[in-house]
Image (cartoon, rainbow, N blue to C red):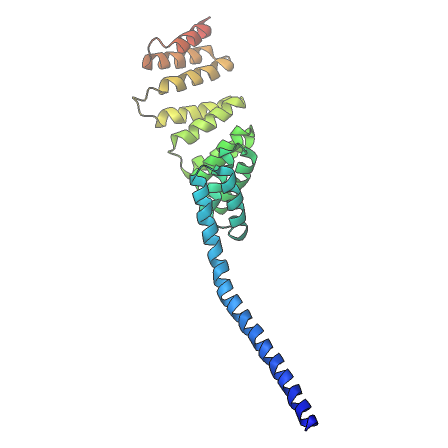
Length: 228
């Protein structure tokens, strides 16, 4: 009898072990089944939290959440754009440009993305980089006045006079005839011609500006300098 009891106890022991293993396996299935679905839901929740944090103007908090979200969702352009803006809001322009360049790589023909990268590069005084992005933006959308305007400004800073003149002329062509800001652009054109030593052409540009804004003090002073 004792031998039989020991045999039964041994079998029961193995049965208990087997049941325990089955329970562990079942728990594992439940965990991975439901856990998998929960992990897939987490990125959406994190994305929503990022946007909510941004709307509260907590830009640093938004950056942290967006960074965490984008580690697993690198192709989300909307979230990447929000990260660019968040970095810009806190003055981290180098980081903003780095993220903006990632957006450009994902959407190389997006004129607005190219333009924004140009703006950030210009703010960082990386003018040659800015020129490249502005030119690409213009190629993608040549009718946008501000693209030509910003490129003209950068060319002017770089003292690339011929390039600047071409872009200022493009701005004037795209501006409506009644646009009063044309006077300011003619002033910029006159400044370039004066820097090149072409006084007559400078005077012509200043006079065109004064025809739009008669008596403008700055244009009047510039014209006098060109005539002097």
